[in-house]
Image (cartoon, rainbow, N blue to C red; front, side, top):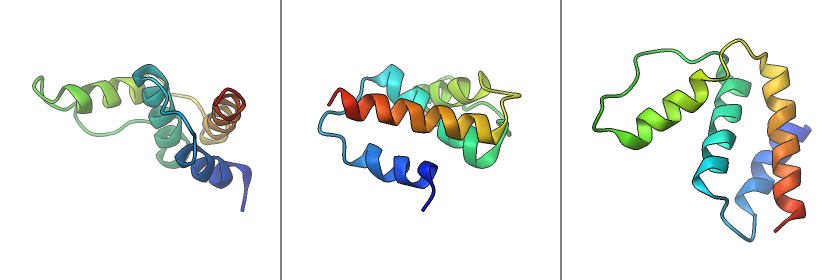
Length: 83
């Protein structure tokens, strides 16, 4: 198991749920790290959660999948240290 896969498991076991901003960052880094740049249309204006997720992911456009995975691992490690 590589460090990115381990971090995916570790984030599920955190003793405290991160705030929404951190959750969006985790989501965006995960998506960028696994799928690359955002694709498809932004969800409609009544899908607030979907729109926020799309926007967070879109902000990472151009970041390599490897860099996104490294940032994800670092963020999860920080969360583990503070939980």
